Image 1 (cartoon, rainbow, N blue to C red):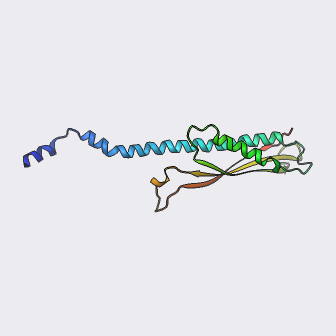
Image 2: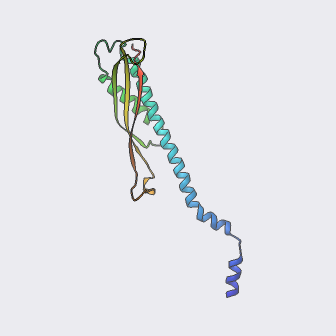
Length: 161
């Protein structure tokens, strides 16, 4: 019996299969993290592109003399929010891990380094909540990070209608 155990201990056949079986769960976890991270970055870029599109729309829709008439951009809030939400939810292959909390347009008037003295600059700010789908697998110092709240802002000069 001891002879059989010694022979089995010296035999190296099948060691690659054992090593592969030990490493496979870690490799699958790394692969899943890479896929989920890429998907979240894709969704975040879609949100940033939505804010950029909404800012461009607002800079073209607002009258060019809005600063002279003491106007406001609050009436465009619904339209701007819809542009951002459609960009985030509209063409995703997988469901997005980003939720749009608020979208708010704003207007500032002043010189801002332009040749015209009273120039309007519109800004669109979107508050986002990023949800990590694999958050339960990772804990740092006993804390699990499942949601992160951030914001995306873009500004553009008012060109008007």
